[in-house]
Structure formats: C-alpha cells, structure tokens
Amino acid sequence: MSRGLVTEAYEQLTAEGYLRSGRGAGTWVSDTVRPSAQAAARDMAPRAPGAQVDFRPGTPDLSLFPRGAWAATQRAVLGRLAHGSLGYPDPRGLPELRVALADLLTRRRGVVADPERLVVCSGVAQAATLFGSVLRDRGVETVGVEDPGSPQHASLFASAGLRALGLPLDDEGLAPGPVFRSGVRALVTTPAHQFPTGLAYSAERRGRLLAWARDTSGVIMEDDYDGDFRYDRAPVGALQGLDPEHVVYTGSVSKSLAPGLRLGWLIAPASMTEEIVARKRTMDLGNPALDQAVLADFVRRGGYDRQLRRCQRLYRERRDALTTALAAHFPGTEVSGIAAGLHIIARLPGRFGPQPDLLRRASAAGIALRPLSACRATADPVTGHEGASAGAADDGDGTVPLVLGYAHLSPAEIARGVRLLAEALPTRQGGVRSSARAEGCLPPTAGRRS
Image (cartoon, rainbow, N blue to C red; front, side, top):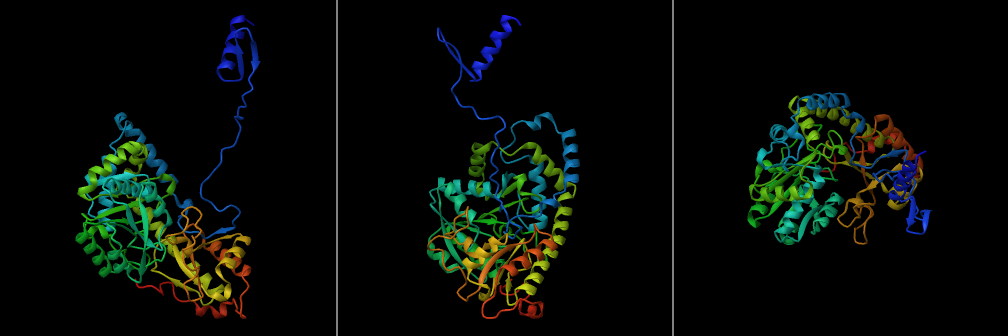
C-alpha cells in the first residue's frame, strides 16, 4: 500500500488516542485505557427488580398507549409541519398546542385557561421547579406541602432552593389552622384526589384555602395529577377555576398517555406569567416542537378524549378487582378514599403482622409495596424510607396502611398479587383468610369524606 495511506492511518489512530508518538521517540500503543465500544449503559429508570407483582402507585398501564393513533397523527403532522416550526419554539409552547390545551382544560376541568398564560412543560415535575424558582427569586424560603403527600414535591422544591414544610390533613383536606399558623405564603395541594389518602377537598375547605391566599397574598400550586379519573360521578372541577389569580394550575399526560412523553402544562396567574416564561426560556428553550404538534393534533381530533374514556373504564374495573381481592384474602381491611385515580389506601388489620415484618415478607415473595409512611413529609423522595421523625408506621390503631397502585396491572395480575401476598403473611391470633369472612372488608369509598 502507499506510504500516504499508512501515514493517514497512523494519524487517525493517534488522533483517536490508540497510539502516541513523540519527535525522535517513535510511535507506541497508547497506555490510556479506553472503554469498550460494547460497554453497557446502566438503566436507572425506577423499577422494582425481581418483583413478580408491583403494587407501587404512580404508573398507568403503558400498554394502553394508543400507538397506532399516535403514529398516524405523527405522520400527518410531519407531512404538513412548516420548516420554520422545527426551529427554536416559543418557550411557552407551540401556539396550536396551548390553544388546544386551553380548550380541553376549560371543558373538562373547569379551568380558567388563557393560552397566553399557559406554559408547556416537561411534566408536573418541571412545572413545580419553575414555580419554585420564581418563588425563590421573590424571596420565599418555605413552601407548605401536604403531609402525607407526594415525596417528590419536597425534592423538587429543594432543587429550587426552597424548604418544604409538611402540613397535616383532616377529613376535608389541608387543616386550615396549621396553614395559618405556619406563616407560609405558598402551598402545594392535590384537591381533586389527594395523594395518597384519596380524599377530595370539600367545598368549604377549598373556600378556606382560597381565602387564606387572598388574605396573605399567598399562592397555591394545584397538582391536578389524575383529576380526569373519577369513577362514581363527574370529576370535581379544578380549584384554579375559583380564583385563577391565586392558583397555579399544573397537569400532564403522564397518567392518561405515558410519563415517558414528558409533556405537561402550567397555567400561571397574570402576576407570575412573565417570570415563569423567562425561567422556562433559560432552563431549556422550550419543549420539542414535533411532540407538541402531535399532541395538539391528537387533542383537537378527539383522540385524547377517546383515550381518557378507555382508561376510565379499564381502571374502574381494576379498582373493583383490587377491592374484591382484598375482601377475599384480607377480611377486615378498610379501603378508603373516593372512587377515583390510580391507587387506593388499604389498611390491613394488625393480625397480618407489623409493618416491617409485612414488608419484609412481601418483598421475599416478590410483591413490591409502598407503605403510607413513605409518603410522609420526612420520607426520602427516592427510596421512600421514612426519616427518624416520620411518625408511626401505622395509624395508631394497629392497622398497616398501604398505598396500592392498580392501574398498570390486569385484573388477573391483581388477583394473583393479592393471593401471593396473603400466602406470605401468616396471621396472628388465629386469623383466617377465607372468602367466607369477606364481608368484614369495608366498601371501596368508606373511611373518608368525599
């Protein structure tokens, strides 16, 4: 071969680090250890490795994602999308998506939705971070969060430099006394279907919280994470619709389509809109334009409404399957919360063992569970383990409260998971797990005011 080809090959190998050379010192194989091109990349997605049945809440049935309809919409959008639409987008989101979402949220959730104040986000997680960043810029240091509530709220606000203060609930929602005494000027709530207790805020409590916001110049972030999923009646309208100048409304498609799409929205009060948009611009310059255009078309053509109706029907069946299985295998279990959402609270009688022993036996049997104590304000947001001051593992009445997700499991998987859990937990004091005692389980909506 020619000298030029050899020289070029040596130069290429040297440039890529495989060879090293020096004037008068020759050419040598490099001592630098290079990783293999075949080295595997770790997958750190939140899963329960080794679990036969995963009852942890928060995930919809991803097999219900409308692949065919979504693919058809994507092809149609690609065929007509202007070249200019593939440039840097408006940080608030594509105008056609903001208009489509504003119409959807006004119609389905009673939101006061001005497209000019709607910001498309990477899910509620980014919406909370944007909200927290603006609060921090305004000098706010503490945000009140529901206790029990979503542990992610505390970690998201911590990333924005804010401290999360856990505030207790009663049977109607956030207890107003502790809210007023706390001195906070910002709250995060899940009023349509509180996570994780499953209660719906009463009309009186909604009014008290809005009065607090007006009296203190406070602001409430409403996390409407599963407001469309009510099974016994029409969903309660959003809190934001009652006072859009004191409520930041947030939501996403994570429970209705798939969390992997990372598409959500935030509707801001007029007094915060420009600050939130400016923060969104510096954070990521806006969400992917193609994904936004596809969602806009999917919403406009009725695909999103059809998806919601399909999910509502199937998730209601799965909730019924879970309460039936618990009644058969764990008589005396109280299932609380309204008939809504993607999870329930099940309080197992103490005869099935204390919480640490119950969780250990469940894990050994391949059943992944989430105790209610993991949703306390002092719980670790990643591991779910409660801190030293997180309170008792039970409710003080000897029961073991669990947060059981069901939307991502088929009725057969639910029945199998509850049966395996029952087989792994020997009862104390002569307890019996037979369907003959199933009448001891309270009905699905018992135990909480709705």
